[in-house]
Image 1: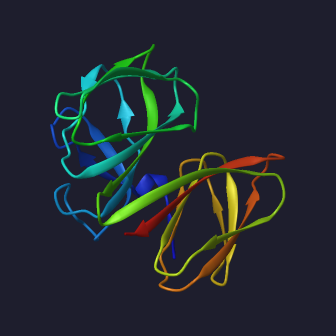
Image 2 (image 1 turned 90 degrees about the horizontal axis):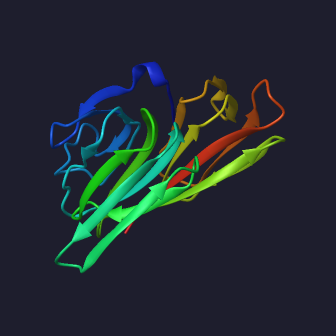
Image 3 (image 1 turned 180 degrees about the horizontal axis):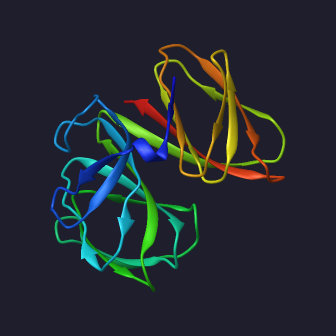
Length: 200
């Protein structure tokens, strides 16, 4: 288990060189795009741009802050051609890294949360927990849990407690079943993004 501070997220250039993300966690450790099983990152999009082509990866894209984007998605091989407006915070949109995706900003830069998994090796389940009272979060054996703090939270475990600022995270990767507790910070409620990563 590790507390991951936003200030320590490593800068990660996009594969196509068109932008930079901040990497929250990746497995295997330090794996590049072509070798990772899963990755969680926090890009900032400051201009209209195509996304990188990432063959074999499934992606989930979530708005954290900003007015939103429109994604133009195309794949001749899969017969895909549509546009998706994304302007509601913390709602995940899933698509394949193999597809051609162009991103148009709705009005200024946006902050997003990006989860990628290697098809056939890992799968991600994303949920939003509105924390109004201390609540337990369980990680199953063999799985990994990343808790992203959309708002200030306090996390509790056998290791003690840690205050999380908005944009910090907790990585729970012990091999066995594990539980941690979450409580809202200074506000009456707080939102946590629970990213469960399971081997397939």
